[in-house]
Length: 232
Ligand SMILES: [Zn+2]
Image 1 (tube, rainbow, N blue to C red):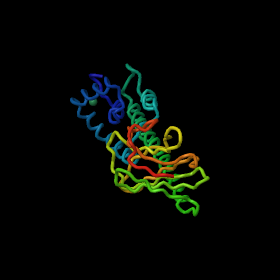
Image 2: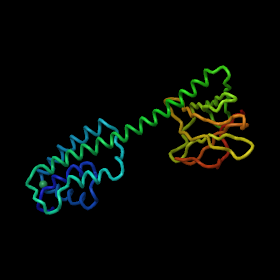
Image 3: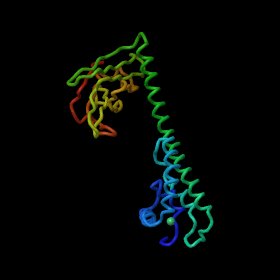
Image 4: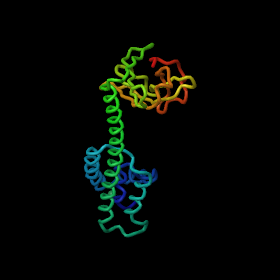
């Protein structure tokens, strides 16, 4: 690579998708080659504007490697043809678009779950037979648990709960005669209420409680005293 341009590796370099060894070699070449530097600037313009149009995320495992391998010429192959560089640009575009699609799909799923929780909460809040429990405890917050006796659907609605810190989150527990059962984890929001959809046979429980647990998954059993409790 020492005496050749690195055109076909530039898209991968721009996307930070090369092996460490290749990344280093390209960087070395770029130090001494103005024409490849120019090419990289052009390429970054394309990939950056595409990346700005979609939200970055990781493409499916193996895709990046497979695409780059498919367009990379074998070692020792003649490199006078401009086509590998164009193929590499196309590969770069595919990678950026694939990453965007993965990310959009994830966002859609999260949005869908949020919407479903909001619908469930709204339905409960407007149902005449629904019961609303205010949770109270050692922290300032508005936390309500709404459910319909005899139905499986409930929802926790929380506003003004402080951020527990980066490594922590809040976990909702259903407290019955046996062990507490996790009803989900959440992080507070400053811009809107958190709504957590909960399903269960609420006649079996005496209370709901919220404790602070470790992110991102919470605990299987509460590890600290609850900060908020409401009797069902
Ligand atoms: Zn060069």
